[in-house]
Length: 214
Image 1 (cartoon, rainbow, N blue to C red):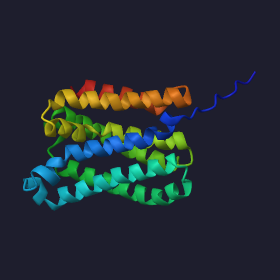
Image 2: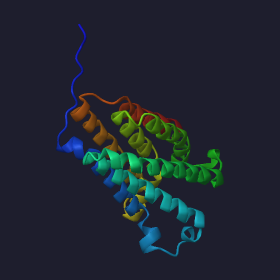
Image 3: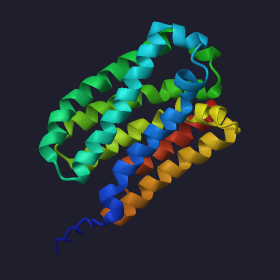
Image 4: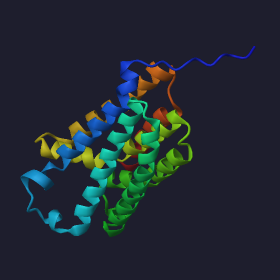
């Protein structure tokens, strides 16, 4: 006998989850780079046009994600699709700017362990962004691809959150990171009644990479 597929469950939490998650990531980004635009505007990186451009691209990317998740929250699918074209163009710029940062950075062997992890995560980030575009008509796969891609690449942001809040980045960054991952687990359990393969696969991959580079 063929098993019937369990219906997805929607409630206040699931309807607003990705919107709240995207706002949380944007706020973390604003805290992480608050020294650049607020407290230490004369620092050396602010005089480098590329770093300024990279920062603007990343800000645009996170703001676009907030708008996109809000469109879905309000079931404004037409606006979501229109802005989606712009969003994927920005994602392309994100990939290009990170690739250039990697190109001008020190060789892989000379990087600290978290830098090595980021280099490994980056190709997977690209593949997940491509997957989110190819599978844009499959909502759960589309959403999970984008947010797992973002979660994998959050070390630079989270480490700077620790630095700019006067806390220990080595402690604060993993705590926030794991909290964000486990929030996605809760979403899956509540709405899908199972874990999405990208949720647990992404976290397992995250642990494996850090186990290797550490």
